[in-house]
Image (cartoon, rainbow, N blue to C red; front, top):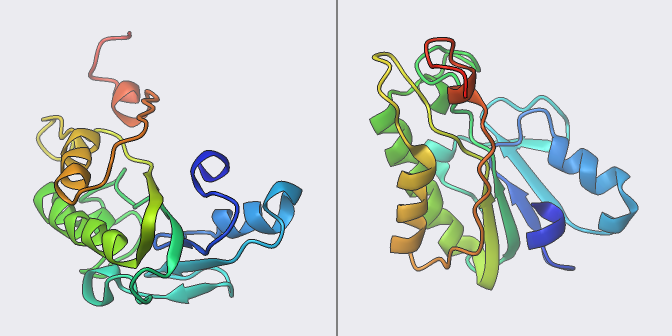
Length: 170
C-alpha cells in the first residue's frame, strides 16, 4: 500500500503503529529513503512511536498536513483483550464501539490529509462473540465514501474469517 498510494513526498502517518513496521519499511528500503513519517499508538513499543489514544485525542496533527495515512487498527481479537486492558483499546471493544471509534478516525484522516492524498486500511470481516460476521471492510468503505473519499482500490485477502474452523473449507 505504501508503495502504491503514498506518493513521493509528504508525511506518512500510522496511528496504529504497533511494533513500528511502517517505520522499519521506510527506514530500510531505499525506495522510501528520505520520507517523513509519524507513528502513533496507544501502547508504543518503539522509541520512534509516540503515545496517543486515538479515541480521546484523534490524530494530533495539523489540518492538511499529511500526504498519506496508513491504517491497520487492532481488530482481529475484538473483545478478547489481545492488545491491552485499556478501555481505549480498540481490540477489546464490541464491534459497534470499534466502528464508532473508526468512524472518528476516518473523519480525522479527512482533516489531516492534504487535498487529493490517500488513506489505506487493512481490515477484514470478523466473527465476534456470537459467530455473526461483521463485514468491517464494507462498513468502513461506506464511511470513507460518506466522508467524500474516493475509493481507488480494494484488495480482499482471505484471512481471519477464512481460518475459522467452524466454517467449511473453501
